[in-house]
Length: 152
Image (tube, rainbow, N blue to C red; front, top):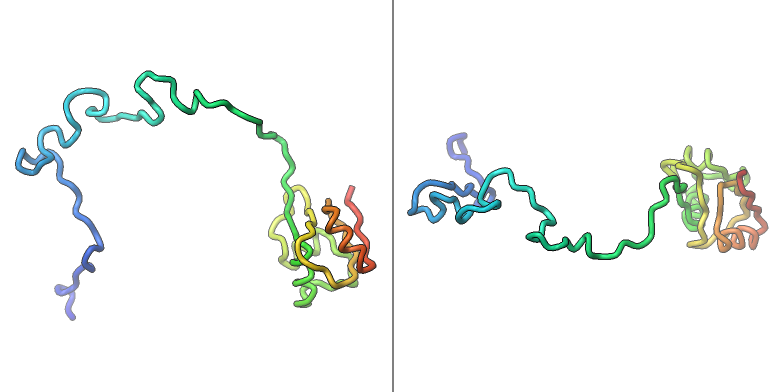
């Protein structure tokens, strides 16, 4: 194979439509835009414009609101915690807190804190000190003799 024999794969690229190249091309003169009007001109930006009718995004009712200062928590499930204990990335004898979780790599960021959820199964006695936890998570920890305390 030589450099002058190199070719693109079949269908790798599509030739662009050459507009305004005479009536024989099928897209000559007006370039497929029709005659006159706003959409035939350049610089048209009419997303959501419905021809003078009230646009649908304005007709539909708005519900609820977004809390501007809502807290964002990093989420950790009990099953993930047990998995890291099994792989010896976390020592269950030590207190499990946010700094330990981020340094071991379970959570990437703390955000406004870490919240423990009850998905999965815990088989080890652990002492956990985090921002928050669900009732299921707390009961799973206490079932095996562990304790959960909330950070203030």
